[in-house]
Picture 1 (cartoon, helix red, strand yellow):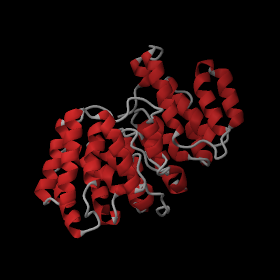
Picture 2 (cartoon, one colour; picture 1 turned 60 degrees about the horizontal axis):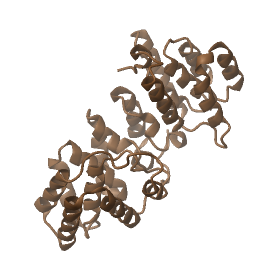
Picture 3 (cartoon, rainbow, N blue to C red; picture 1 turned 45 degrees about the vertical axis):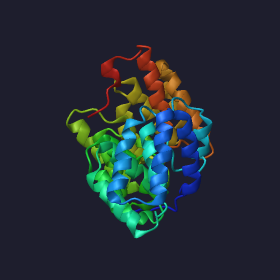
Picture 4 (cartoon, rainbow, N blue to C red; picture 1 turned 180 degrees about the vertical axis):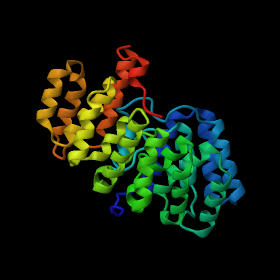
Amino acid sequence: MTAPIEATWPDRDAAAALLDELLRRRLNEAGVAFLDGALAKLAAGVDSTGFGVQLSAASRHARGPLFDADGDASLERLEALSDLWTPRYWTLLDALRVRLILGRGDLAELEAEQALEEAFRYADEGELCALLRALPLLPGRERFAWRATEGCRTNMVTVFCAVVCDSPLPVGTFDDVAWKQALLKCLFVGAPMWRVRGIDQRLDGDLTRMALDYVDERRSAHRVVPRELWILLGSDPGERGLASLEVECQVEDPLARSAVYLALARAGQAERLAELEEADPGAARFLEVARAAARAVEGVPSGTWGELEALGATSRSKGSLGPDEVRQGS
């Protein structure tokens, strides 16, 4: 069993200031006017209905992703607030709504708690995402722990990701059962497990066993094994894990094989990687990712799978992989 780790939570005031600066660059004139007006109303105090109205009205002023590309200085400054949190995959509307939530001056008080509960109760999908993304920034976030758990039960992938991905909430607050259920559900709903923060800190033998049991179930049903499942083998997959990886080395999907190479790198299997490179020259680009990560001080982090998915996307855009080769299990 594993317990929640001591997470580094992003500073609320710093996040609000950086989001404010970013929004004023990204929103048009009408959007900035809405932001200023809404923040003034929230600072003066609104009831639960007025709060919900502002969150809903934000949808008229923000479209598209928050960040268009990597390397944005604002993103780097936001990510510096915590190594377990990032708004990298937020939409512009997510950011606007989170900024409005942080604009309340009574976030530590019962009135704000009641207003947030009311907002959760009547929220649409997009509003739910923003409310859940805001939880790590709130004082007394334990008051809303059950809301985070509820978010994990949904079949709406966007809402599930708003709780589980890019946030210190799961690794820092979920108990052992909730933590493992969240990771396994990533496989069921197709959520990007590599964006779950803190996997390496809370990985244990029981979770690895559960992952391998799932592999056996998928293979018995003649179904594809989700590539990201191998993240859960960590640095010590054991004999059963290594044997399962060997089976996966024989599949036709080059991205599935490359995920195996990353898992082998995490397990320190340098000799086997060399053998595979000789037998599978087409996988050289993926093996290089694995080797580069293996040379890192702390081995191959779970987030390396993000690099793998990026390489896969590049291969698909160039037409080097067919649709059957890049499919992921449902």
